[in-house]
Length: 149
Ligand code: THU
Image (tube, helix red, strand yellow):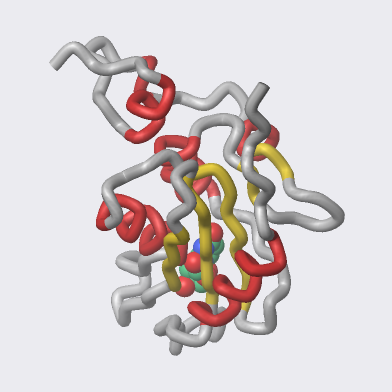
């Protein structure tokens, strides 16, 4: 029997808080940092980047998912999202969907008093398996369910 590696939540929170300091958030004033770890032990990070046209704002989780792919798109297993003071934030609706593609329903999201599974924040999610031609994303690769094309 192989045990999953323990998640170092304190370290993830510190990483997320550090990256929040790099956020570009002059419009909302809310700096957000996200740090996550993959099933092969890589730490990925992102911060929010706002834009004068508001609607083009990138959430911290967008940057994190981009960083994940930069590292080869392994399966995401745990994420911590915080503001500039290190206080927990839960992902917005769009980012719950983004994280679902990267980590699946059992992705752990840091929260108070304890981490929560993504499927408690996004139950009955729409995902790659609902498409007629399954795409080969991190979730499929990690579970060995390769797409047809
Ligand atoms: N924000 C994130 O970075 N992630 C979320 O999940 C929620 C919101 C950012 C976007 C915007 O720059 C600021 O927080 C206020 O909405």
